[in-house]
Every structure is written in C-alpha cells, then in structure tokens.
Image (tube, rainbow, N blue to C red; front, side, top):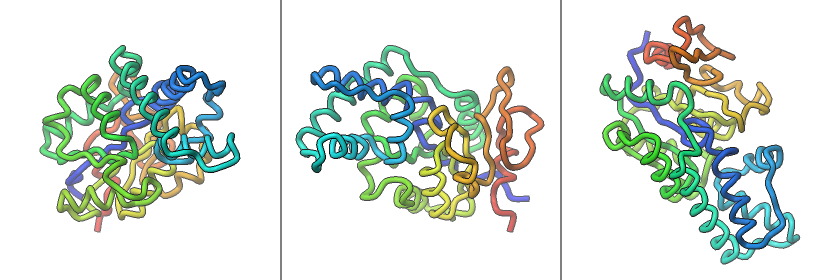
Length: 253
C-alpha cells in the first residue's frame, strides 16, 4: 500500500465551505440590487451558472445572455468589484462556516508533515477573506495558493493543478486533490492526480456519471459527531475521512 499523500491540494468553494450558494450567490444578488438591476439568481439558476468556472466569467456569460451582446468589460469589473465587497462582508459577519471534517483533516495533515495547498478558480481576495475568518491557522498549514488570477485557463482546464504540482516539485502520483465539483474533478484528474470528491450543496444535483473518475466520493469529510457517507470508493469504518483513508486512494504501483 502507498504511503500517505505527499501533498493535499484543496479546492475552496464548496469544498472548504458552502460558499457558492450561501456566499457568492448572495453577494452577486446584493451587487445587482445595489446597481439597481432587476436580477436575482435563485439557487437553481446559480447551480446552472456554476458550469462556468470563475465569478467574472460567470457574470460575463450572464450579461451577454440577457443583453444579447458581449458584456462590456467595465460593467463586468464594476459588478464584480461590488460582488467581492459584499462577499467579504458576508464572510466577516460569520455567515459561512467550514464543512464537516475540514479543520480536523487539515490539522491532521499538517501534524503529519504533509504539504497542503489551495487550488481554486476564485480570486485571491475572496480566498484570503474566507481563510482569515474560518482558518486563522492557515498560515502554517497551507504552503501554497494557486488562485484564479494565477492561470490563463480555469477549471476544468488542468493548468491550476499542474502549476501547483510544479511549484511543489512533487510527482503527481503522490498528490491528492480534494474537490466538490465535476469541473474540479476533471481539472485534477487531467493533471494526473487522484481525487477525493466531497459533494457540496452546489454539486449534489450533478449526475453520478460526472464523478466517475473520482478515486472516491463522499457526502463530506466527516467528524466524530457528524459521520460521512461513502458514495463511491473504499469503505470508511471510522465515519470520517482520515489520512489512512486517503492513503488508499493513491496509486499502489
């Protein structure tokens, strides 16, 4: 059996916290209201829009759809800036919390000397706001951030994961990604990584076949008082994802 992963690469939105529906969606709606625009993205509409990675890209797509022409860059930037401001306020107000098992597993990996990094399509400002509020110890637990502005192509393109592996100077077969979406899974898998999928509220409705390439799929990472369920992959007798469980997901050769 393989040793523990040499590195864990964490997605952010939907993986660390339920930020998509309860954070970013609400922030976009507040930005629209502030600008006097009539749009409200409900949960179903936002889940549809999540097929497009990146908030700025999502917004550009939507504006082009409603206006019937390409979105003006200055309009996109103004709305995106307002959205980021509202998102930071939601985070600062304690509106978002870590998903079960995230703090526990990240602490266990740090104690074991496993390198950890963030790999996300979100912007650095939004990531910093979330981590400072929910994971104040992230400075010692996370050695690298790869954010949306660090790459030319966002997930499902593998560029972000390839950049992280290159920066960490580790062989892909010793690295494991933790993701919640089909786009994230595709990006990590195409970079040669094993992937644990932890389904989020935003990805719960995605079809099972969208996650066929995952090494395992769980409802969440689990805590002792909130056990997870394995949807696909090795059984988990402890009721929560441990380093020993992750060890089973790496190639054995």
